[in-house]
Each structure stands twice: as structure tokens, then as C-alpha cells.
Image (cartoon, rainbow, N blue to C red; front, side, top):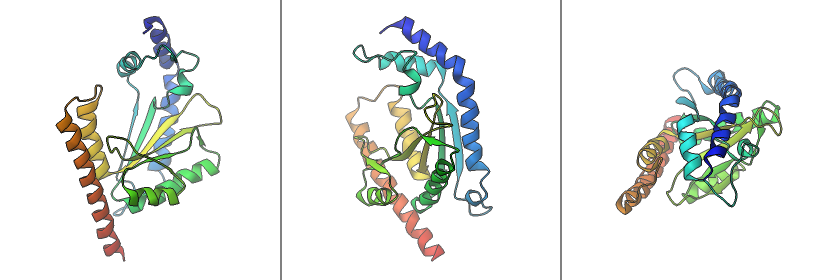
Length: 220
């Protein structure tokens, strides 16, 4: 680990942080100010969260994940680290996701946002995976059974400024918050906790499916 390089990376981020914040705030407004996503009494969006990477957490992450064979440098840092700004969009049930996905696609098609990489659907559930694939998303499975949809967007092509958008249901958010409490910044070594989190993920999936069923019945 090279403390001098880490200091320079952190300083580079501090110098550019306001650009990330400005873009992130614009992303939040794009969701918050869209009428069809925020209809009174029946909104698609339940809530929106946003954050910039904390300097202390960034320094700790750089130290923990230092790789002598392929080190981060001030020159490649902004290209390789894509979660310095983050927006999380929460909705009630999975059927609502396609509307949010179309909203994001529209911003890209209009040239307001540019995709830095292909969006990814983290899901272990075969039924959900099929649903996401039909929308053109790349499915991936994490050992932890983490579930969420990730987009990394930029304000213009080949920009160093980017923002990660996570879209997930409230059930998935509960799982994510519990997992984060246990596994961040250092993963738990407890095998029972790991297994219980996998079980909880299955319960979350069941809850999401049941919520879809309830609303299909109610709306149908």
C-alpha cells in the first residue's frame, strides 16, 4: 500500500467533489420532478436517497483494496471508481420497475445522460432474472444473494464525472440495510450470519412477489 498515492487520490476527489455533487443533485431532480413518477396517492417512487462518498470511507476503502499489481492512481481513479456519487430510488413492488427503467432510458436517448457501462440486474431469482432480461438488462448473481439494479451514468460521453443509480424495492432495501450493517466496512466472518442473510434474501423475494400479486389483483 502506498500512502502517498492514496493521499493524492483523495486530494483529487476533494478537488472534483463539487462536480459530482452538482450532477448527483440533477439526477435526483430528474426523478423527483417527473410528474408521472410522483402522482399524489399512487406514486411510482416511494423515496429517493443520495450520497457522496465520504472522504474517510474512501481512504479506508483504498487502503483495504490496494492492489500492487493493478494499483489505482490519480490518473485512473475516476475511470475505475464509479460510485463516488450515488442515488438510490426505492419503489414498492417489482412491476413498477419497468416504468423507472423507461424513464432512465429516455434520459439516455435524449442525450441528457450517457451510460458509462451496461446496466446490471443483480438477482438470484430465475423469475426476476427473466423479467429483467426482457427489459434488456444484464443479470448477475452475487454469492450474498444481493438484489438491486445498477446504472452508471455520466453527464456527457467519456466524462470523469459519473453517478451510480440503484433501483430496488422496499423489501430489497431492508435486506440491503441489514447486510450493510453486518458486512461494511468489513465482511462478517460468521457463517450463521451469512446463511441467515441468504435466507432473508429469499424471504424478501417472496415478499416482493406477493406485493406484485396484491397490486395486480387490486389494479386488475
